Amino acid sequence: MASTLLSIQVIPKTPNGENSYPYVDRAIEVIQQSGLKYQVNALDTTMEGELEELLEVVRKMHEVLVEAGSPSIISQIKIAHSPTGFSMDTLKEKYR
Image (cartoon, rainbow, N blue to C red; front, side, top):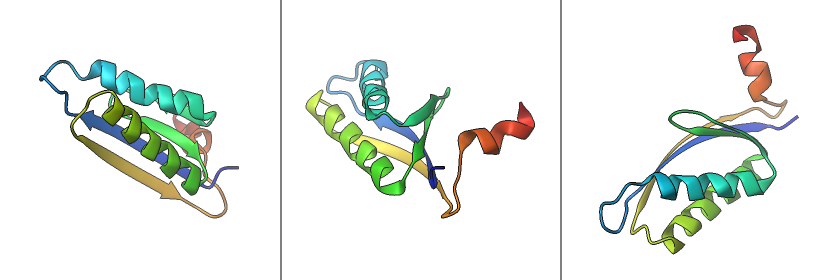
């Protein structure tokens, strides 16, 4: 079982004030390519894994957004960590 959940909302500034959705889509592609378990929600995306690998995905997301032309990015991140393990399924099961 993974030890960490990380939820992230990226808010990329766009070069000419255009819609940021294509940039957010690129950030989500980084998560999809990571191979980690994830869930896209309306306002953020939650990933499940080890803290080091999750933070590496965040770093890559920022790199991709800068390469796409975003002059700056704000990321709001929530981290839940337990050495004994955490999972999205366990935390949500009583609500399903």
